[in-house]
Image (cartoon, rainbow, N blue to C red; front, top):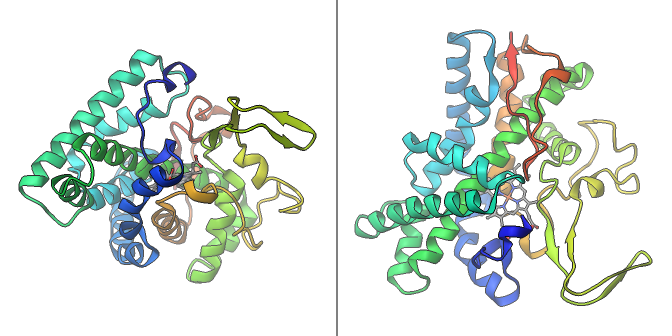
Length: 326
Ligand code: HEM
């Protein structure tokens, strides 16, 4: 990752202060809780449709393909105005951008292809705007608020971050629930209680903390921390999983307890760079975890947990394939 860091161009995720605020302002009104709540009926409909398809199709099935990926992908496509037919292209490219093992050449090539793709979409929308975020970015380009190149960088991060993270949470969360019969019974019993599910989602986010390598920072001034000096110029990976499993903040952190209060977790980061899409992700997870086990009460893993291939090599933790049966 260090090898290609030098080629990264400024964007929302790697700028500070005023420069960062400028990027961030372009998105805040599009991702408010109120706006995201308006999407809830669509998220519920898509989830129900995908579960209908699961029930009508082969059994066992692979959950990433059947539900975990299509739901957030369809939603981010709808929000951005990206054609869902292209999902194989951007799923594959997101896999490469998130990989920690990519070569600098692979990184450069993948980013360039994705940027070209998004630029073409924004360009088309500048001629024929629609009610979507890429059209809004196109308008800003026309108003000379940002360049097409900058707009494509923002579109790219939203497209990648907007589907892969939520998808991983759905797959990991399902596997976790299916391994915890007692907690699953509680969730199934209370799946109509919106307050309970809201809380349960926070506990799943805390327990799983999938962005295990996301909060990376470069130190700009020497700092003392817990008896250590961290020097200007050094790099730091702030371990969000360690924070979320800190026994002082969460007693018995290794215990999954859907009834505990976990809302002070750091799974979406903290401070100015805190996740832009967190309200959308929360609603997607709320809908999935209140619907899936209610509609398929006999859902079970169709593999031993030791056979599953976890995404050790990705910036966002997950499971490559999750076979389930019912
Ligand atoms: C469960 C799902 C998700 C998790 C766990 C997650 C986690 C995170 C974390 C930890 C950060 C902060 C990184 C840092 O401090 O350096 C972040 C930033 C970000 N996330 Fe998410 N995210 C999720 C879903 C989404 C979705 C659905 C979107 C878009 C629709 C999104 C867009 C972004 C963007 C644009 C940033 C950069 C913000 C900035 O640097 O100012 N994320 N996310």
